[in-house]
Image 1 (tube, one colour):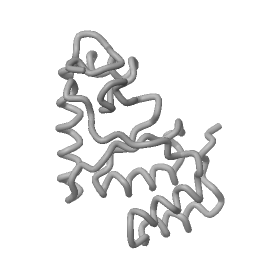
Image 2: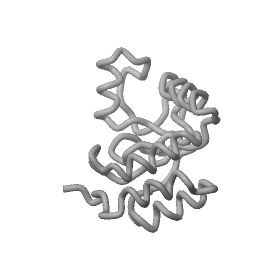
Image 3: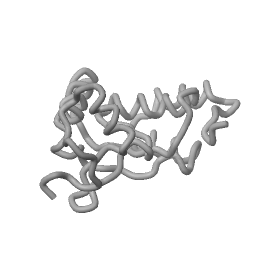
Length: 140
C-alpha cells in the first residue's frame, strides 16, 4: 500500500491544484497534503545522457515552458492520482519529476545520473549512454 494514497477529498485538492495562481502555491499545497513526497531537486541531467536532456527540452517545449529543475519525489504508486496531479502540474511548468529510486546526483558535480536499474533500461533501449554505470559523470 502506498504512503501517498489519495485522500477522501482528492477531487477537491485536484481542483485546487489547477486553480493555484503560482507554483509556490502548488508546492505549499503539495507539502501540506504529502509532507514527505518532495525529496529535493537537481539542476540538470549529466551530459553523459544527452537523450534525457533532449527529451526534457521537448516535453517543456510542448508545454510552452523551459526546463527548470529535476524534482525528486519519494517512492509512490502509479495509482496515486493526486501525486500524478502534482507531477503533471509541475511538469507542465518545466520541471521533470522523478522518483528517488530512479535518479540521484553525481557525487562530484551534482547533475542527475540514473540508478543502475534505469541505466539498464537505457542500455536495453539502445539509448546513448556510458558503457558502464557509475556514481559520477564520465568527465568528473
